[in-house]
Length: 336
Image (cartoon, rainbow, N blue to C red; front, side):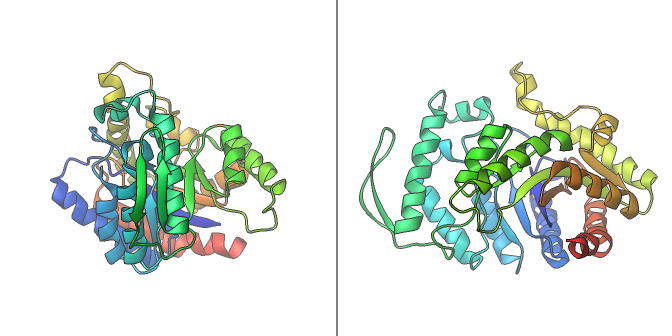
């Protein structure tokens, strides 16, 4: 069982320079606590994502950590030129001496894609960019003639530390997608209640067991949960509830502005989110029990904790990390 962090880097009301400084302080605490990886979202034109150029922030992360793995979750491939993205991936993997985790996706928001002039062709662009990037990372050569990009005899002076490429991550919401990811040897991550997640992990394991690489170590199957730990349940809920509300407002900002239905299943009400197991909030003992139940039901081997969200104070997030380090991670590591 491994534990990592998922971060939207949603606006918390501070000056952005201060938010960046505090988040880098928090990332250093993740590293010191022994968390596995830090995953950063990419969003555009919305308070949900203030790290809209993930590579820029992750370059800073690479220099403030020693063991922590990190990466985008995900790069929105349909918005990138494959040569530029390939070069950024190589630089990050080299800067970190091989700690990059490479999340890939088309992009969940048609509104954000539209800001870049990308519409119904997003899936086709994603597919072509991924093909070019993996070719370049794996072979060190770029020869490509496609619908959107033509690359002829492009010299590649950069290469990743991890060969043939950094580990791949993909967000899944359907069983058939989980099965496809298993065949492609990708790590997966999802949201939602544990019983729903279980259908995805079961599909992944079934496809993995039938694949040619079934004897290899099983990749990571992760789910995300908001996590706030304090000395008392009252103290934890007092800071978690308003922070969740601010995060949820940012989550729906563009969708409400454009009168569109958001394709995610987070409840607006904080108490409902806690009741569904999506927010793990309370004392170390209570959160440990909640985590154990969620992990067991979902069948995951990786938990991505949302530790900083909304306007949660830095001190509270640091307390959560400290409790994870001393009271929770040792228990789960011993159990597995």
